[in-house]
Image (cartoon, rainbow, N blue to C red; front, side, top):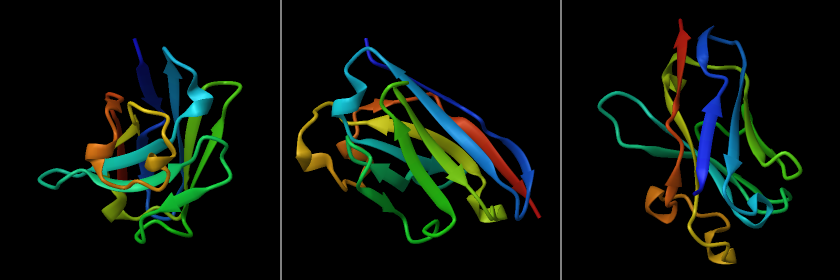
Length: 128
């Protein structure tokens, strides 16, 4: 079955950096859009970034654009989220996600309902 496993979260001071990884298994990774979402306590899950199958198209939420970078290594079945200039408001559980289908329809998709597979999440805490 499809599995997504995030790693790389932790506690960091404001202005610092973290790099999240999401290792996938169970299907041909290189065919699918991949996304990162986050959920803070009491908040809805929100889109952070996504990347198309080849890695040459990326999409970001306005709140992270210019600070976060999504990338992928199809040879290693892994997607990354490099987070720089972190702010306390970036504190959340971060999830990687993938749609059920490899359709181009999902390129640029931002709503969680477009993503059927989810990892267990990794906590990111940014202290002020």
